[in-house]
Length: 252
Length: 147
Ligand code: SF4
Ligand code: FES
Image (tube, rainbow over all chains, first blue to last red; front, side):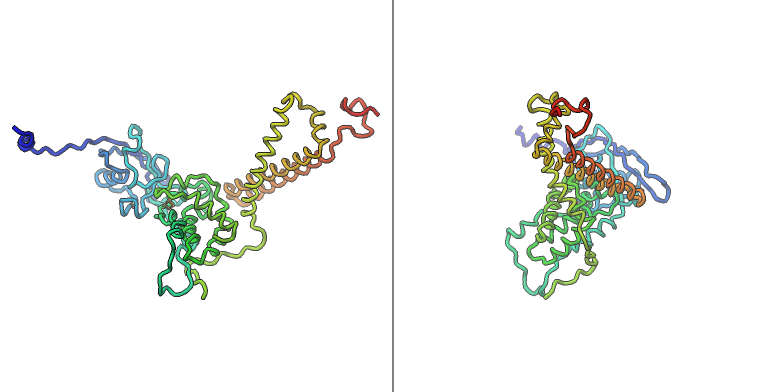
């Protein structure tokens, strides 16, 4: 008998995907019931391809429907599911369970420094407020009736900071932001950088003035937490340093 | 044609006077670099060079301050290091002392201690005289010229 025949005769057995059990300890908070957040653990059956987001889904769909978290795209694009996983800010949808140490429980909690609303959801308004205050839009004179040309080199100047998805992982990992929440935070500076160094933009001076403020770039202590937290791999600390130098020069 | 007005955020309020945060930041960087040289030079000369730490006594200090080079060195070290440290603590207080009264008290304390130490230190460096005229001879160090 040929090998092909042997293969044909065998009944079709679906391949069993190996699973394992992981323990997640989640910091829960229901403002209607709890005075203080509490830790709750869940055992979840998972596959090697599962991410923390999948584990949260399994818990929500199969064990406790009251678990609350944000997510939208589930593929690292929308920036809605930044959370603190084993003490580090990451996107739940970009963190594979198998990359974590599953011999120990996985700790999941909301990002720090922003008001906790429920379970893994925080109030993002202070974060977006500082984002808005740096004028995150093209400021250009002239009417937009023809394209604004830019050379590849000019475009590359701010390429890194165009990748921001406003997940707040950086800002909520910043110890200076934790202290009083007044600091603009890395994300706002990253998005200011994106326009300050854009050759088509004419509002650099306005943004540099805003960031030269008491709560602006000078509060950065070069801790590098933000660069480490950014799920998009943006060199956040470097972008902040470039803005500092631009403030000192008085121009981009 | 002018740049379009920002639709949402109000323009940054124009602050008058010195931008302390900016100059503080620049000062910390600049003084930091100079301090690395000053401190390690100081440590090397006092603890390593020559006889090492055993050489330090009254005469050693008096000998150093007889040289204007070390007077300038130590003055710079004193001023830069104390202001650097004081500014660092000011930053910490601004970060963590949320209560206005507590913050004012701490800032005033930091300012006072820094200022007092700088004044006293400078006074010592510039008024130091190992062999004051008219002092009791038995209190003078041995290297003083016998009157
Ligand atoms: S810079 Fe990175 S970590 Fe910060 S908001 Fe943007 S994508 Fe998120
Ligand atoms: S769900 Fe959109 S980034 Fe994770």
